[in-house]
Length: 244
Image (cartoon, rainbow, N blue to C red; front, side):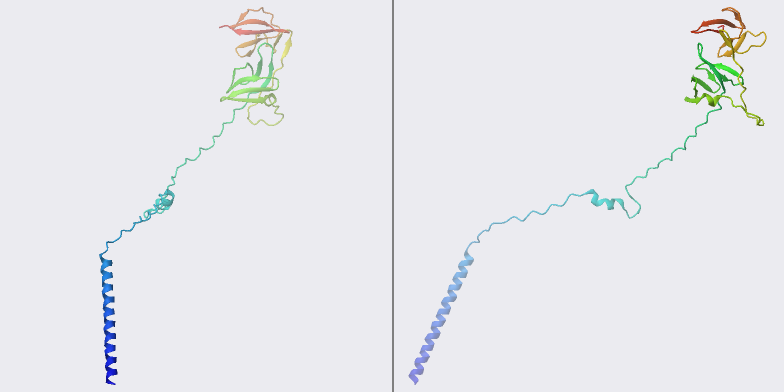
């Protein structure tokens, strides 16, 4: 028994020594590998550049519109410029034309003459271009007559200028036109009925007409007028022209 126990102890001691040797050899190998690893120079690695940062967006003025329009010191601040617009001038009231002269007839032989009422009443002959009160006679025919007043041409029918018959109504103080005198014809001479002893006829502008029955020859001088006889297509036109 003692030999078996002794042999067993010897075997155990050998096993324990073997295990200790193997453990030491493994430890020494680990230390050698660790030292070899630490002694190796470091291997450089490729450096990758970092990604570029995203550039900021450009400033847009419209994004700061609310900031520009408002301020802590003025709530009603805004970029709208208030333009004071002057009120339009009141409409110009046109002055109505003055009363029109009365129309009593016209004569177309030679230079046409329109018989109208003058400023002092009565009848007077006017040629184109003559002043008829505040008006200027521009043109006339058998239907219409045209005046100039304040640079405007005013055309009226002759029926509007003919004197109206007041009838038996009471007098209201309004001015009325005298009825036209009867115009008579005596052969080649046309005019108004003359008064007894009168030689010069009705005034037509600067000239005067001959009276019916005037037998004085052409060239006769009387009261600053000279008698002229102008031959016409059908009859002769007799008138007295002022001596200048």
